[in-house]
Length: 242
Image (cartoon, rainbow, N blue to C red; front, side, top):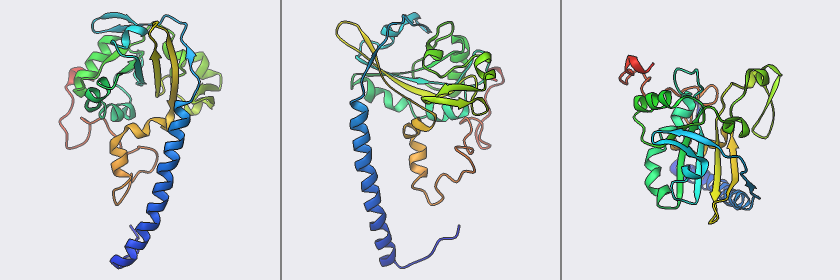
């Protein structure tokens, strides 16, 4: 890395200049957050049902007694052998948030189209505790534009991240994060979704790397990421889970 080496005083001046930009970023983030909170809502009219470890549950039941539900659309298709490495990277950061979210009236859950048995096997392999259910057999994933049929992929473009996306940049499963609210009458509203790189701020490792001397040190977005049991110095996953 080719960086100038300066005196402590010169470094301080450069750092103070950057601090001004960081404060601008913080203030802009505050404004964006306020605009996010002000988005209009859409009432959910479809009776979605999911396979869970405790039986079939409706979308309303996934709230688990709370008024807010955050769903991470985890890329694990019915015929996939393992979860997406990028989604797995994000999921590594979820378990520690659960006590804080649950006690702040928020339920966090992952949803995939894979059958529940495949989800449970991969979840055991990864050692995760967060709730994870299957939307297999419902239109939930397609309605929220994170799963695509062969015909859709063959059409040349799919609707993803609020725009038509060329299929060379798409897979049958793609990631996303969606938020829902349930009122006192039991009505459910879709309040927010984000896709593609919109979930990066959930990944604390990236936020730390952004402040490390080499930054993310990547050739393309997160190309350095592996499932946490696939790094060379980690124990290999049990053969039964591949």
